[in-house]
Amino acid sequence: MASMACSWQDREEIRELYARYSIALDHADFAGWLECFAEDAAFDSPRFGNYVGHDALRRFVDLYKESLGGAKVLHNNSNLSFQVEGDHATGICYFTYYHCKDGRAALAALGHYRDRLRRYGESWKFERREVFLDALPAAAGIR
Image 1: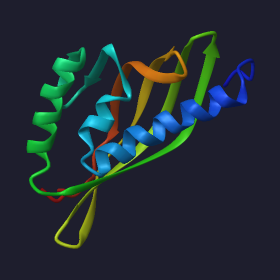
Image 2: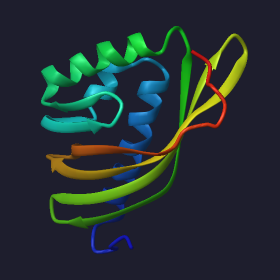
Image 3: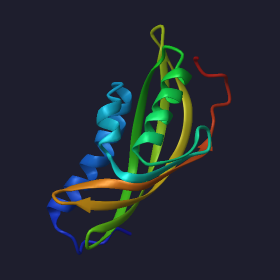
Image 4: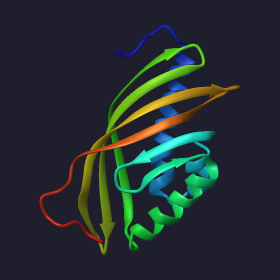
């Protein structure tokens, strides 16, 4: 369960970080997506591998863009829960991930994120983000 020991401002900033992450990916704002991460952050994906630091995350972006095959994507997050202890936090949320192409949408994956966050001055950033794919669609997706 989420700790209420932090300020409401911290809670809202963390919620906004989760939203910014998905919105940036969905709108191909990869510079904005990168800003969600600490300089030394780790990102671990079962599909794309492990990346540490902004230079490595830029390499992930290149692979990710290529993997889309011209599709637009939509990330829908739910059941966000986090605990804050000072300038550090841990969090989890579920995601539903869609590929949209040629006017059609296809479910691409269901999963969840497990996160470590850190406050830098006035902003929160992901220190570590792990992607877990819980289910893939039964039918082939749009590629």
